[in-house]
Image (cartoon, rainbow, N blue to C red; front, side, top):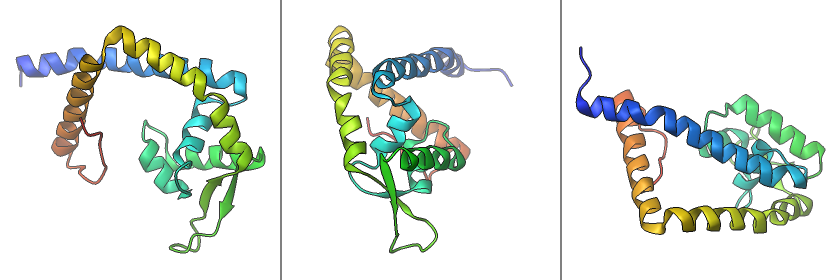
Length: 159
């Protein structure tokens, strides 16, 4: 089977998408490291700011290739550092909920100004309309790929 023009266009997007992911991780590293966090620690802790969550749910929400076991290791580190605690889960006796402590919330809040400065500067250079269009396209590619693969169980981004 030969690839169509649409297939060529999608394939041409793959390497820049990986490069964009790498750039986001590098920026997260630059922002998080001075505060004693890694990007993964920030990501997992940030997922619990609105509500305590079981590790499996954090892995689903965070996505980005983090397996449940990786999220579990990060959660254990966060608990060891005093930035999170495990709470009983009324819906599942074995799947504890990860909840940020006051110290965990404080460390995430400590990097908020730097994250906002980065996102404001990059966003201003690109432009809000172009970013909204990019989000809509990325969301459509994700939905289309999941439909093709039969993986409709995961929530995607709304564009």
